[in-house]
Image (tube, rainbow, N blue to C red; front, top):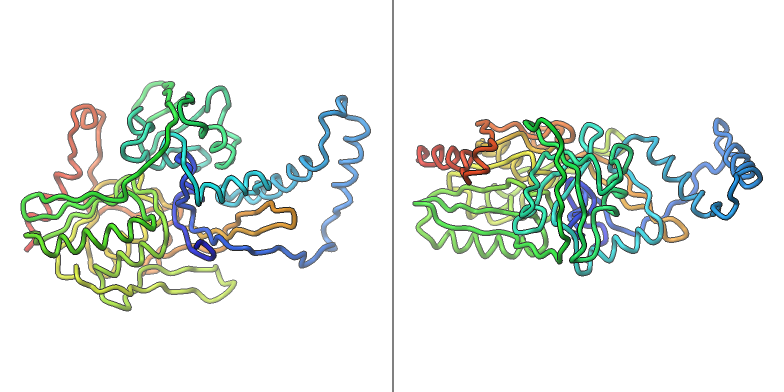
Length: 393
């Protein structure tokens, strides 16, 4: 079901909910073969020398686990690349990953990533404990319980935040505009997330897309048919707090809005091999509808790809805040003992050839959400998008 399926999201699993929405990760059985087992410019004997000295001199020999030391060394090698999306997973971590792909999910229901060296919330998901506790896109997580996050990888942070339903995790959070940090306690639960919702606002079909899961592909097709058969004359597509999902789903949804053959995204390998263009293959049945798209700092990866595809090909306007900026592709490399390395192999580009990673998409109409807006359940971003659509013919 999953081999070589591209999963686009701000991190390589929807780590806190436990569900997979990946990072543009190729989930395949790719074995690693030693291309140059003894490069002339690398002295591997230093590793064995260090291990021998530790075994001989370390004060507590019971703490020396040779296998864990090997795993620690590989983790250190991967961290030296300074790419938050390139990580090593032990066999147990790898097993948990594939269980997440196929199983039951327990956690707090938000996606996190590392941006500018800081663990941040990408998006709390609707109806989950994280959203109910008040977490927001862009929040910086400084501590998980008593553990500082400054030197944690994404996966290490995940393992600390997630856990069985009914248990609690305390996050020390800082938000732009706050004078100091706050502790937020969240009770973990089983996470169930709807893929989308839509309703009529006058003659506008307001469609909220929460993620790009396989279910979303089916649900969007049904919603699109309902919209076509409704009085709707325009569409407002809300991608706020949508952390991503499958590339194929983003590509399929784009096909409802674009002409067949128009570029949805470009996979760029930085000169290592030819780029790959992913094109719209759909029925174009929504191409005649005026469309506006809502984005914010919680819109990531597949959301950014869809928004950029509609903007670059049709000039569709974006309203809200600059998106997260996640546009890299990871491949899962399987090692001989069942451990894995997830490594960045490419970048997603917009149809116009622009990078997404670290940049994001700038809205055509920038509208910020204030503390007062959240407290009083106001939505000036939605109001602005509706205003623009109402002026369109």
